[in-house]
Structures are given as structure tokens and as C-alpha cells.
Amino acid sequence: MAVDNSNEERPDTSTGVTVKPVVNAIRILRFLTTSGSPERAADIARELEINPSTCFNTLRTLVAEEMLDFDPLSKTYTTGLGLAKLVEHLVTQGQRLDVVRPLMQEFAAAHHVTVTLWRRMGNDRIVLVSAETSPGDLRIDMAIGQRLPVLMGASGRLFAAQLGLDDTRLRAAFDKVRWARPLAFEDYRQQVADARENGWSVDDGYFSAGILAVAAPVNDRSGAIAYAISAVTFRGQYDRDGVEKLGELLRKLASKAGNILF
Image (cartoon, rainbow, N blue to C red; front, side):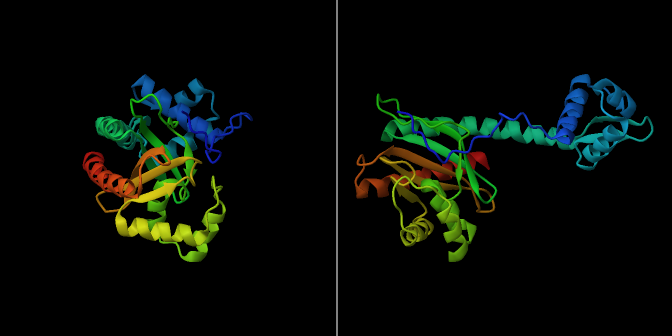
């Protein structure tokens, strides 16, 4: 069973609109990475057919951001340590997620749920970075990469608990979310408070009709919520005691995931 959620944010690529300075920067980085040798600004501009002045300014910006290194003696540019660190970080995160995945698979199989891992992106969005389904015949599939409002779902209750929003700002953000079934703000606020106290949270059919989600926070080394790991299943599969037990088990899974990711 695939869950279709109308809150998913999809980029509009139909217009073909691009930001030229960003495109130039990416082309320069790609060129220097591929060439593997120092290059002068004039040669880069000529090779990529970029205006020399524009190319020089872009190169200066990339050097300032440590994406490139500049040799004042030869007046050449090479890929910088900042770019290497960025790539290394991305690879490392991907490898760490690969290590977490078997834990998610095991939990999904043991409890007949779909296990999802959400990452916070800024103050207003969360993105699904990993999902593992139960091997049973009837299961819930969710698309990697989908983005939701930060308050949405069981994971949203966890992030909301740490955002530190007063009632006015929380209400303003709450009113922008399209819920699958009616949810009073006072009830949502109490659910956020419960999540803060319990260390896990529940969304009972508000994220998607007929779907129950339970989530626990994956904290970074500073104690801030970086990810939320959730168990997604059909409403009615677990009674109240079962939901509480699932929440406590997710807390343990989240702790294991945090030790791996951070």
C-alpha cells in the first residue's frame, strides 16, 4: 500500500528556470574536479565560455568559501579542502545511514510496521531520508525524499517540542498544515507537551487517514533533535498499551541510531 500525502513538497521543474551564478559555480567545480590539475582563470573562462570577469568573481567567491584553493605564484586554482570535507561528510553520512538501515529492517519485521527516518531541514520542513517496510503482504510504502511541514506527523510533534515556539507562533504554523482529519490546536499543543515528557510521540490518523505513527527523537551530540525515527502502521493494529510499548522500544532504537549517526 502506498501512502499519498498532499503535503509533500515537490520542486517545480516545468519552467526550466536556473540561477546562472549557481550554474557557473557548479560548472567550475566540476571542471576542476575532472581536470585534476591547476588551472588559470583565463583558461577556465575560455574552456567553459564564461565571461572572464564573471568567472574571476565566481572563482574568488569559491576561494573565500574554501571550495577552491588559489596559488598566488602560479595564479592557478585547484579544488580546496572545503570541498573535500563537504564530500567526505556526505559520504560518511550515507555510510552511517547504511549501518542504521539493518536496525530499521529488524524493527520493521519484528513489529509489522514501516520504519522511517526523518531529518529536519531548517525550521519549517522535515525530509524522509530512509524507510524500511515489514516483509508482510500488507505494508505501507513511503517515498524517500518527500518533504513535509515540520509540525506534521508523529515526528513533527517531536520537532515542535524543541523549536521553543510560543503559542502564537505555534498556532500560526499549525494553521498552515492540512490535516487528514480535524485536529484542534489545543489537542495538538497537548500532544507536543506529551512528546516532550514521554520522549516519544503519536500521530493517530492526522498525518494520513487510517495511519498510526509513533516516533522517537534521534539526538546529535549536543542533545538537539537531528532526526526522528518512526514506526508507521494501520490504525487499530495496536491498542493503547501496545502504542506505549512501541514508543519505548522506538526510544531504544533511536538511541542506537544516534550512537551510529553521531
